[in-house]
Image (cartoon, rainbow, N blue to C red; front, top):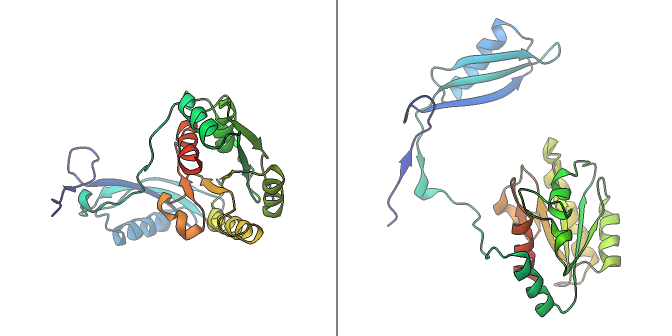
Length: 243
């Protein structure tokens, strides 16, 4: 039986339970708005709730930062996360694996799909300059990288993947309003499943700061990478999954 390990939030001193949250209410700035924010925070279990910052956002909305203690505990033994189930490889090891396993270059297609125009994430993974001291996938001799850039339509993405005979398709989604990243990912997964015979579609990999990395199967993709992912992690996964 796993031993429970309970922890409490930390603010000023160990175990004081202090947390900080922020939100916006559709209420004009003023005393009533601050009272409403404190009441909402109290219903969330923050008691006493201190409004440490408030600022008008237009004429009818106010942004708040709330600080205060909670009584909740976290049982670390019950926490479940998506663990990395493959080894991290050096560029040389990735190249060697692809050369021996595929006996040709691995074709990797990347894009920001739909209305998403934020290419920083996909560029950090694909471009040779890379991210966090690691070279991007263009640096790998045994990979042929095709970066389609931003605002790529789903039909265009599928058509280009077929034309390039892509082994893997990397999709970056930063825009999350009204869960647009989830909707778009499901559209991509459905389009590829329809366009390819069963078991023949490219590997679908999605990345972005607001994804739950354990939700890949539910969204119809093979892998989800969250914030802070490095090119080496992606390259190692592609080598593991495809070779």
